Length: 261
Ligand code: NAP
Ligand code: GCO
Picture 1 (cartoon, rainbow, N blue to C red):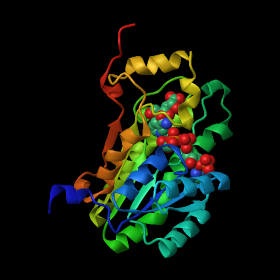
Picture 2 (tube, rainbow, N blue to C red; picture 1 turned 135 degrees about the vertical axis):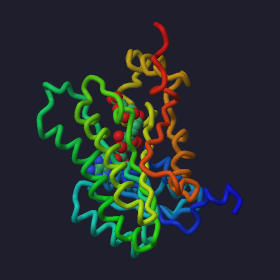
Picture 3 (cartoon, rainbow, N blue to C red; picture 1 turned 120 degrees about the horizontal axis):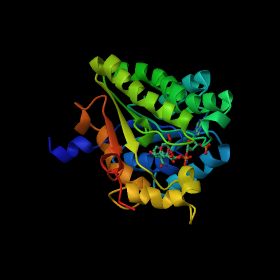
C-alpha cells in the first residue's frame, strides 16, 4: 500500500463533538476532505444549523445534532441515532469544551464542576457510548482535544487545567484498556489557537496577546488549520501503532523558555 493511502479515511464515519465552529469545525472538515462521513453536535440549535450550512458551503454533507455532551442518556441515544443515520462510528474526536477564567479563590464549586463536567467527564461519557461499536467493528480511533494546560498551569484556569490534565490521563487509560481491541486513543494538545474561545485573550492591547507570541518560537498564534494534518494522521491507519500519545501542536511553546523581554 502506498504510504499516502494509509492517511485515507474513505468509508469511515467520524463523530466530532462541539464542531459547529472553531477547532472542531476545522478538524471535521479535514476528516471529510480525507474521505470520512461527518456527524457533529453542539449545545445551541442555531449554532448547529449554521454549522450544517457552513459545512455545506465547504461541500461537506455533515449530519448535525443538538446534544449536551454531559448528558449520558442523551449521548447514548445520539450515538444510536448516528449509527443508524450515518453509520457505526469509526473515529471519535472529543472536542467540545469550555473554559472559565476565574481566580481559584473566586471560583464557585459549581463553576469548577461545570468545567470538569464538559471537559473531562463528557469525553468519558461519549467514549463509553462509542467504544462498544468500535469493538464490534474491530477497530477505532479516539482523539481527545487536550491543551497546553494538560502540562502547564496559569492564573485563573484551575478548573480547565485540572480537566485537561485529567483528559491526558483518560487518553492514556483508554489506550491501555482498549488497545487490545485495535482501538487507538490519542490526544492533540493545541497551543494558543485563534478561535472564539481565545478571542478575549487576543483583544488588541491585551498584554497576554504579546506574551503568547513571545512564548511561541513560531512567533504567532496558532490557526485551526494547523491542527488538521495531525488530526487526519491520528484518525487514519497511518497511526495504527500510535496509542496513548498526546501530540502537541503548539508552535514550540512547550519546548521554549520564552523570548528575552
Ligand atoms: P469554542 O470555539 O469555544 O467552541 C466550543 C464548541 O464546544 C462549540 O461548538 C460549543 O457548542 C461546544 N460545546 C460546549 N459545551 C458543550 C456541551 N455541553 N455539549 C455540546 N457541545 C458543547 O472552542 P475551541 O477554541 O474551538 O476549542 C475546542 C476544543 O479545543 C476545546 O476542548 C478546547 O478546550 C480545546 N482547546 C482550545 C484551544 C484554543 O486555543 N482555542 C487550545 C487548546 C485546546 P455551542 O456553540 O453549541 O455551545
Ligand atoms: C487560556 C487559554 C488556553 C487555551 C488552550 C491552550 O486562557 O490560557 O484559553 O487555555 O485555550 O487550552 O492550549
